[in-house]
Structures are given as C-alpha cells and as structure tokens.
Image 1 (cartoon, rainbow, N blue to C red):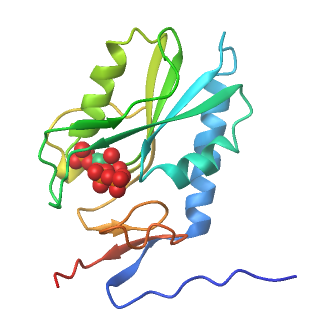
Image 2 (cartoon, rainbow, N blue to C red):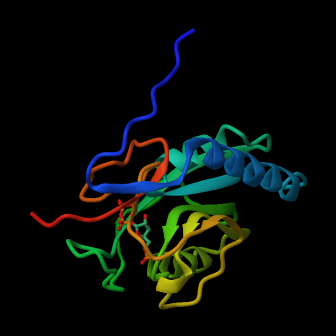
Length: 187
Ligand code: PRP
C-alpha cells in the first residue's frame, strides 16, 4: 500500500493552520448537517461553487452528500491585483443552469470583507430562488466590512494570509492538502 506524502512547508509558508485530517472531519460534519437539514427537500439542492477558491472544498463536500443535488459554478472578482477587496464585485461567469425556483447553497472557500458573499446573496435572492443558504469553509471575522449570514461554517480563523485546499496566493499553493499561513513576498 502506498502512502501519500504531505507536501513540506516552503519558505513562504509560516505554519500549517488546519491540517488535512481536521479539514476532512469538519467537511464530514458539515455534510452530515446538510444531509439532515435538507432531507425532506422537494427538489434537488443546487450547490453553487464560487470559483476558483471553492473547487476543492466543493468537491469533497458534495461527495459526502446523500441528498439529491447538482453542482454549478459562478466566477466573480473583486480583488484585482490587490490583497484587499475593492468592494466592486464583478461577475465573470454565471451559473450554467437557471436557478429560479431552486434550492441554492452557495459554497465559498473564505469570507473576508464579505463583499463577495453579500453580492451573491443579493444576486441570487433577486432570481427568486426557492431557498438560499451559504456554506463557508473559512471565516476571518476581523476583516468584515459588510454583514453577511453564514449558515454553515467550517472554521473561524485569525486575520492572516492563508493558502491551500483551493486558496491561492497569486495562483500558488492552491493544491496543498492543508490550510497554511503564509507571508506574502513581494518580488
Ligand atoms: C476570494 C474568495 C472569496 C472572496 C472573499 O476570491 O474565494 O470569493 O475572495 O473575499 P471578500 O469576503 O473580501 O469578498 P478571490 O477574488 O481571491 O478569487 P479566487 O477564489 O479565484 O482565488
């Protein structure tokens, strides 16, 4: 039997904040909660992953769901080249399916200022969905600029830059199996 090596921390990574086993256990718990709360749903649940950061979280989460569901994606941008949200959220790619009348669960990797999720909640509400909930893997409450409701939360974390498990820094480190704290280096 082969074992998968845990990638070592590179010099720009400070420490592992949340290891892969802890993430997996939390994703299982969240899926169990969703399975229970949506068990009497009259239609499929539509999971809308917010690209790019949520793709690994979404992939793990949906494979633990036992309720009827479909996966769709949306792509937004608010950061440009900055590490702070501009608050000016732009839609780059909409969901493929029409979500009107559907039960929608927005899947986010991280909540920072809250501008992105706030935009999404307003946007989906205006599409007359049957129900709308949010699941967020990581929350940085200290960074919040706008109030948004999280229905399912993985972990609250301090205000440090994090990468791994879908999250990147300039497209680096997205595929690390853990969440690591990093020190952004400007070249
Ligand atoms: C990140 C993250 C959220 C958003 C949260 O996306 O995936 O969508 O920022 O920040 P906010 O609460 O301040 O709005 P990012 O723009 O970095 O794109 P990516 O997911 O493609 O890396």
